[in-house]
Amino acid sequence: MDQHSSFAIGQKITLTIEDIGFGGEGIGRSGEFVVFVPFVIVGEVVAVELTEVKKRFGRARLVQVLQASPDRVSPQCRYFGDCGGCQYQHIDYALQLRLKHKQIVDLFERVGGFAKPPIDAVVPCPQPYGYRNRIMIRSQWDKFKKGLNIGFIRADNRLVVDLDECKIAEPALNEQIRHVRLNPPPKGGLKVVLRVPPEGWEVPRDSFFQNNFFLLPRLVDAVRERLRQSGSRFLIDAYCGVGFFSLELADLVERYLGVEIDSAAIKAARRNAISRGKPNGEFLAGRTEELLAEMLAKFDPRATTLILDPPRTGCPPDMLKLLRQLRPAQVLYVSCHPATLARDLNVLCADGVFDLTKIVPLDMFPQTQHVECVSDLRAPCSLERSKVTTHDGELSEEPEAPGTGRPEVCPTKA
Ligand SMILES: C[S@@+](CC[C@H](N)C(=O)[O-])C[C@H]1O[C@@H](n2cnc3c(N)ncnc32)[C@H](O)[C@@H]1O
Image (cartoon, rainbow, N blue to C red; front, top):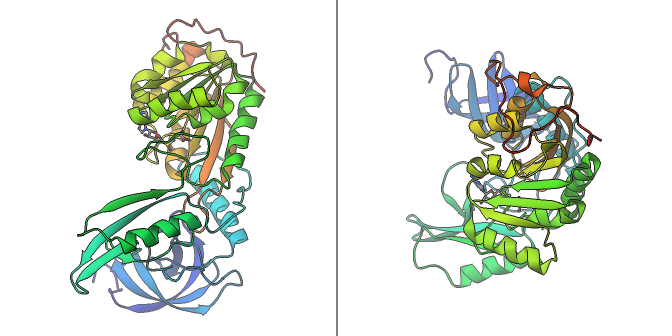
């Protein structure tokens, strides 16, 4: 027991759930003591058992739902609750969408510092189960049953839950799971990526591709619409993978330029550009943070859109600082992690260097805590470049973007 708390691990208490935080845990209180508990819904009264106790908060496992929400539904998957893949199968899908919207608003207010963030309703996935086109299966030796567990990491520890199907995966992947189980690896420690390849794209075995084909057209529409509105003539696609956004949008711009660290993906992007008939651009292998200044210098920033689609950790601080100085007319930041997105947009938008004009959330990951967001930032033309402050508040004389001589007028704003 924590010396400052009157609660103890193993203690059973009753809670009313007040909120569901980003990550999926419900939040309830016993007096001043805050308790986080998974697999619950706002308004429910639940009996829980404390599994972790700190001074002011604790964690618990759900023992019984005493008063169920009308939005509670039966999970489709028999491993739900044990497997760490899904957090929301017990919640009606329409409520999952509203919940994700509220979580994004909360993060943008709390972490992003935006008073009234312009966030659209979450775009639903037309197929809330059976949508994932890529999964990673692990094998782990179970010394108690003296056999292999083959499946995903558990919800409550790093062990592997043994499973023979995944309800959010495409049916073809469940066939592949059965194949892995029929031909088990000789020992534990194996990770196998199973995927359904996208039609019309070359994707190397270990390279990234968007993992929900059912909502992908809506993701492209969202980015396309924002790019079209900007009137930009040039596109820089940072963290471009196999060239997905560049090549989907190449017809809207005169030139595109993509950058990606995965050299196999970049080689595939070049071949995808040929096979998809999009010759008006090129792909560079390397780190975005090292090549971005050079890439932005190739185009007039007043007519340039930069797509940022980094891994879930977001963008490095120095790169955000650089972007505040170089200020392309539009930044379309695509992210599957609203918390790091809110953190990075807080930096980019400080002192009005960029305006956040729109966030379009898309439910690329139904039944899970994850959600994709497309955010549209514009560099206001009224801001004098020579007076842009650094994010730490110092006034800086901004260097001219190399080779551009950017004027203060901004003719391409929507
Ligand atoms: C979320 S994926 C986006 C891929 C692509 N935009 C798409 O839609 O298919 C992030 C990509 O960033 C790449 N990446 C990670 N760190 C990078 C870096 N420092 N510079 C460039 N690319 C990086 C990864 O290899 C991965 O392909």
